[in-house]
Length: 112
Image (cartoon, rainbow, N blue to C red; front, top):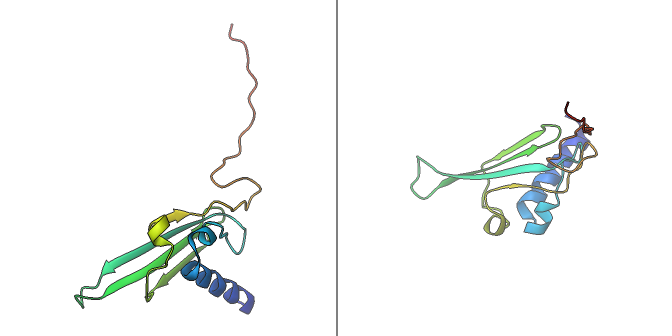
């Protein structure tokens, strides 16, 4: 990976971990500007009774790009308001709003 790509990924991860709920909802794919699915998981560690494994999975709905961050130190602050699984709503990577499928207009044809 080139330096510019690494910096964009680091910036995105920092934004996700430190952002307010409103800022997280405005995030988009750093490569195609599509909307993102974010899933935060917290699993009890089998080795320690007080420890948890924390990870964040990010995937673009448009281009399929993925980022997985394991071993996080703490839960992002936006989880209290938005929950552990969200989709950002601003991405337009292919010129259409997220989750909006392209369609062909149909003409009504009279039945015989």
